[in-house]
Length: 252
Image (cartoon, rainbow, N blue to C red; front, side, top):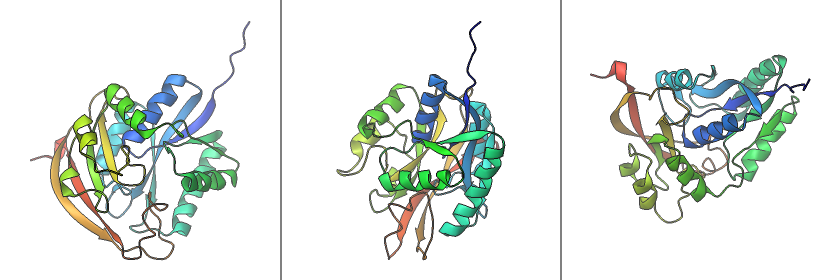
């Protein structure tokens, strides 16, 4: 009788965007892990995904359509590193007690960010898994499109892209129109996306596009964001264009 080895339990760090979707699709297809939950940091003040600006209702619909439980980590409006690390450590320590030993990320090539994640996980006896690491981003974005994923651009950094890119579909036309020097996957924080359909989902996520708004952030000492290793070194702050997505049941 062949003994089947139990799969390792893992938590998946889910942003709702393209890298997360492509990475989760790969991990589930390979079947090496039992996915305990999707883990997402949420701005508690606005009830939106941190940095991406997507409403929590749409995040919850993604998890429901994928069929994996969602764990939300609430953050203050502008958390500093101590607040961020405290909230994450508390969440991960709870997961470890449930025999979760691995934390999976869709990071691609930011060395400092990977080192930071691995150090934080190692301090509580967990490990980081990076399935997309060092895969060329031009190749990854084409895989995303070829696999039939659908996404809309929800946030663009004004340092790299103008207002017209916010709200666009993430397709070959979008990639072709990116200015020279902008990473096709936005790995340097150039843009963020919301995935609403594709092979991960049992049903598409329905929404309508709302207004495009501008927000400028003045970083404070020790401030933290999902782009803390790429953007917060700007002493004068930086601005973003956000395209609001309105859940279908809230549309007018």
